[in-house]
Image 1 (cartoon, one colour):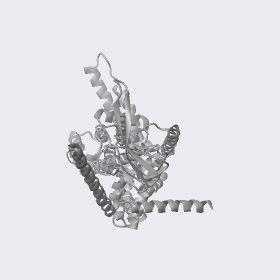
Image 2 (cartoon, rainbow over the protein chains, first blue to last red; image 1 turned 45 degrees about the vertical axis):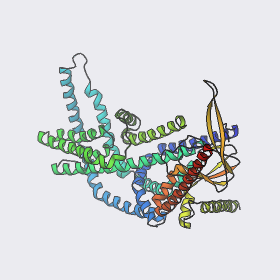
Image 3 (cartoon, rainbow over the protein chains, first blue to last red; image 1 turned 135 degrees about the horizontal axis):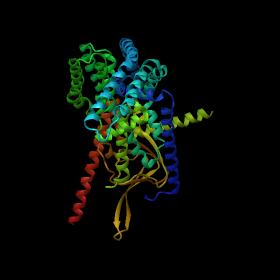
Image 4 (tube, each protein chain N blue to C red; image 1 turned 120 degrees about the horizontal axis):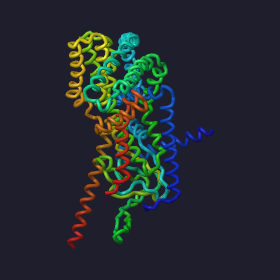
Length: 351
Length: 176
């Protein structure tokens, strides 16, 4: 019955905490430093977030855990396989065509920037000349080239990712909770409840976020794909997939998603009627997203201040490129939950 | 040989844990299948003599069952000695032994704060059962979840009746 902790207990707590942090750091380093493991881990986390409720449902129907994991896993693998079989050839053809036409689109984007720079400099920037093209062009080149070149390798050529993702997802579903439980045994007693609760809150937030954002991205991609197909616009599937994926980035995502289509339009025909249709499709998808999808599907997402969102996206982009931009928001949401829970525990724990 | 001893020890520990869970009021209605689910979910923690399990005012997320050893529950009162110095006074409320449990209010209350502190009186092994564990059971086996929640309501009702009786008793004493 004391609030004074003996030195032996303090030492034991420090040792336990040290080993727990070393284990966490080791896991983090293995995941981030092993080639292909980070992307496989993230995709496995997405699969896990979608299948976990199904696995729990099957377990409620008295199916043993192994079968409850295997059944939806096999069905999902079949559905994904069939979808890839249907969509991948079109996607790869469109990617190859895009790679061939890329120089044309670069020069269009470059010309646009030059014209913009000229107009700005003649009208308002006599005192302070702006180098818009020189500033923005490297980003566009890096962004477009990087995305176009990396996407096919991520989707189809990276055999490691294709093998690792289902493997990791299967074991996350089967033994993930046990693994976390074992990891938590390393946590010292004085912070055990905090760590357990934190893990639960963070996992619930991340799973909800992933589920909501993936459904939202798929719906956005489908709306844009149908619109572009109706317009008979080139690379419809590729552009729709890109828009759906990049939509995960708040505020700037929808804008970035529309840029490639506008550039392709300007390089190909430049007809103003088509541009209006194009903007209507992308704008319409955003209106549907804001008015219908976000209130009903994305309601679980943690509220982050717009300034924090922009900062998170910039930091993500600086450190890990496009992948960093996509994962920055769920990562910051998890950090926000962790930080506020730890802060509350350390400062406000006395009534 | 080492493996045999290790497995025997683990089996022994598992058997003790199962026996303890089965004897606890919260889990006594569970069938062997549901009990093995709980067994795999609960957290076994070791405490040194004098080590705090939780402190008054902290946010609590669950309850503990004593597997072995004993636990002292006490209330901490902060007393102001002078304008700058504070003194903490501890008053023991109860002393709990093996198979007893405490902290169950945190299982149902949101952002529940501990109403008293708990510390291990000797080398103590506790089985922690927390809100995330209860939610996992409800999600994976609702029937087991309902059985646990029904018993939990019974325990909380009993505690409420005991508190009401104690208040009435104290009021009577005050009137005298």
